[in-house]
Image (tube, rainbow, N blue to C red; front, side, top):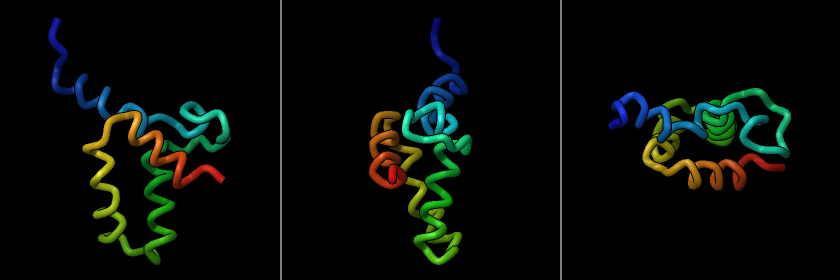
Length: 77
């Protein structure tokens, strides 16, 4: 059975929508990965929403593995 467009989108954004503590064993944060990345960029962009939005767009085109790697590189302390 073919996947629906919604199922394809859910699979593509799976990592972005998963809580940090469920995706990474090093995190206790229950914030979704998407929000954790957003918060990281907002802090680094001096709370500039437009700049943060621009930086976040790339994650929508990344594979789950690439999102996961980028999140580890940016967020793991």
